[in-house]
Image 1 (tube, rainbow, N blue to C red):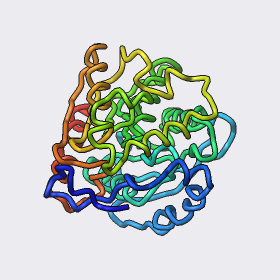
Image 2 (cartoon, helix red, strand yellow; image 1 turned 180 degrees about the horizontal axis):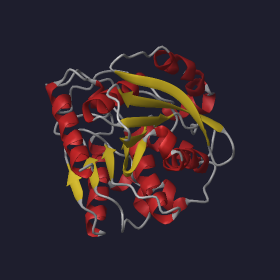
Image 3 (cartoon, rainbow, N blue to C red; image 1 turned 90 degrees about the vertical axis):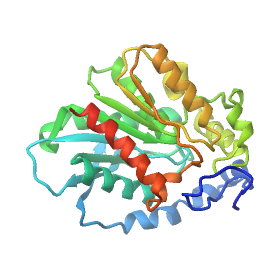
Image 4 (spheres, rainbow, N blue to C red; image 1 turned 30 degrees about the horizontal axis):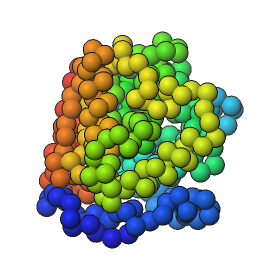
Length: 312
């Protein structure tokens, strides 16, 4: 991995690394990607904080599998809390990593909300339908166990970054069509939206950027390779977007996914959904792990301003 100075990255951010010179498909097919999982998860297993209360628990997914999740609760005691269900990024193939833990702490502390961060199964080992059902199972669990979890069911929203943005969008659609649970909002940060990525100019324009064109192709191939019975849900752009809750969509200025995020925001608007679209100039994929950056701090404030609006 190496720095690509040819792209107009913001000077307010650390220099990024890129997957542009990594043959991700080869790493997946050889099994090397799966072998790296333990290394990735070590910082998460060691993660500690006194800024909020952190608990690791489990819920039962659609097939009876026990899925771990992290629950972040503000130190301030309340009878009921608003709740964020956070679907993490990682190309559908990586587990929770340390930046997602840190983000969850920030949101729980600053917003006074409970954050539920499920460690759903991954595409290196499981079909896309299984992953999506794990994600929907987290939402269903929160609503069905709201009293014991101290959750205000009128103030539950979903959040996702990158591939997690895709899962958050898909779960929002499932929530509309299945059990009648009501979400108050959806936050989609530099989301994956469409498996037909080649039709968006930003994929070629930033093909060697942090999340490269080839890595994006390998991600979708791996996610969809075992087929699906939910084709209109596993690819959010394929589905009808009517009757969905308010959305915050955050495309990034220097990202292969920029134009599909913008297209998804436009499709939401065309379906009558209220959308806050916040393009971040000069930002690269995963930029928000640079928590000391003034640009990242402004982005977090914009996201939390949207949260305040939907939680009124």
